[in-house]
Length: 105
Ligand SMILES: [Zn+2]
Image 1: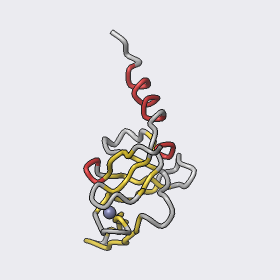
Image 2 (image 1 turned 45 degrees about the vertical axis):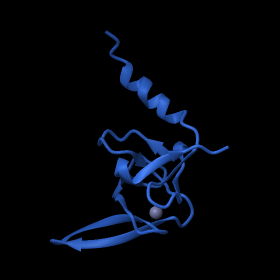
Image 3 (image 1 turned 180 degrees about the horizontal axis):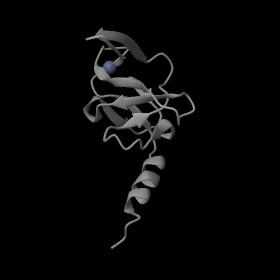
Image 4 (image 1 turned 90 degrees about the vertical axis):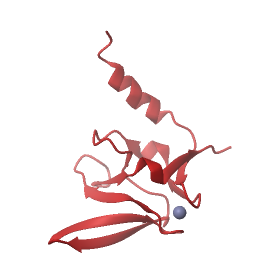
């Protein structure tokens, strides 16, 4: 049995071509090279494209969270968390149903 398969999957992710776009309006949101494997079970990125992702600070039950929405159609994408290991010090934790990989010619 090959116990190294998890690393193979991570490498496959890095070779993805195209752009991650909003599943509703098709706006480009994330580049595949900014995707990384955080181990949280959700697609994770460390930066978004241009001004296409809107950050909404939520203060609920005394806990502040940053909600991420598509800046074009307002689709809820996920949440932003602090992450010490990324170049931007943040992690975009994205709902897999909110994005789709679009081929770029
Ligand atoms: Zn959208």
